[in-house]
Length: 188
Image (cartoon, rainbow, N blue to C red; front, side, top):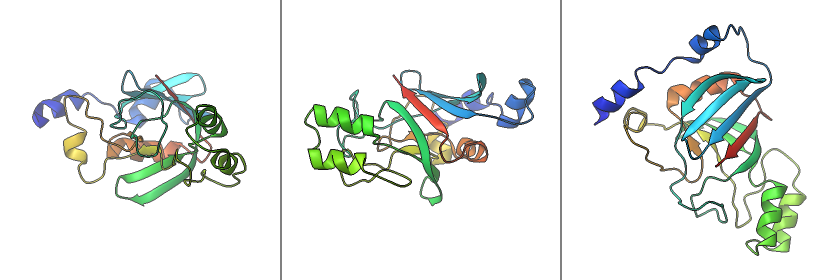
């Protein structure tokens, strides 16, 4: 089965080659658009689609993230707020989840308390606080030591805590072109 996955993935081109195909020498105004339905993340430079990546998500099956324990990948507009190169998942780019919009929706639906909402609303700094029912710790990450196996599965296997996972090679590519504050849109 892994051999079949390797064959399926053999056509993937590097970011350098994708940029050359688009006649791009550098990337400006980088943003990422993630489609949960298509298991795909698109890397844009301005309005130009540069490259698409195969991704997997949280193992939770719901549509709306309501708890740090539900393993659902949230939907919404986020920004990269921290990048960690020393993680069990090779590299991880943390998203500013939960945003005030996430917290407001959770408060409206009685998922978090008013004090938890205020904790998110009053947050100043890099990444949001994790001391609410919504949690935090959501990002775009590599696979880590099981990269060879997971990246070559010929089927979708969602396994994360709600984060978006790409191969270690792909997270290395992204690490070279994203920054703190890079926009990440996660849609259905």
